Picture 1 (cartoon, helix red, strand yellow):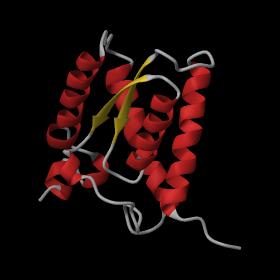
Picture 2 (cartoon, rainbow, N blue to C red; picture 1 turned 90 degrees about the vertical axis):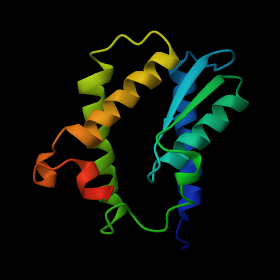
Picture 3 (cartoon, rainbow, N blue to C red; picture 1 turned 60 degrees about the horizontal axis):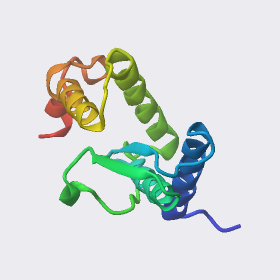
Picture 4 (spheres, rainbow, N blue to C red; picture 1 turned 120 degrees about the vertical axis):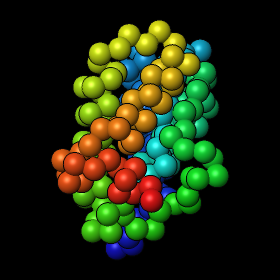
Length: 146
């Protein structure tokens, strides 16, 4: 049995995400405006794949990168924490739970530019202002951006 390569896993995940998005859009993406938020971590590649599939299906895609394009890496060869991919998903799920509960559900973003501005402010707060218990009450910037 051949192991599945990371690039193939990203392709599969992105294709599945695009399929789910089309379903949530009523079965067709043609002419629909779709914002795709892409992180620079392990799940970012899947978001770009989903954006490509949705664009090919006729959606008007707007991709928001969490970092400058030159800061994006290639296909990751190791997990975020070095301990294993299963734990990576825990970190991603915690982050997106925070984003949804502390920002998206509380705001009434009316446009993609408004969403980008709002999320930019939230991620600045999350990374540079708000201390995290799991980081001994330091900010992610203090721990990871040094």
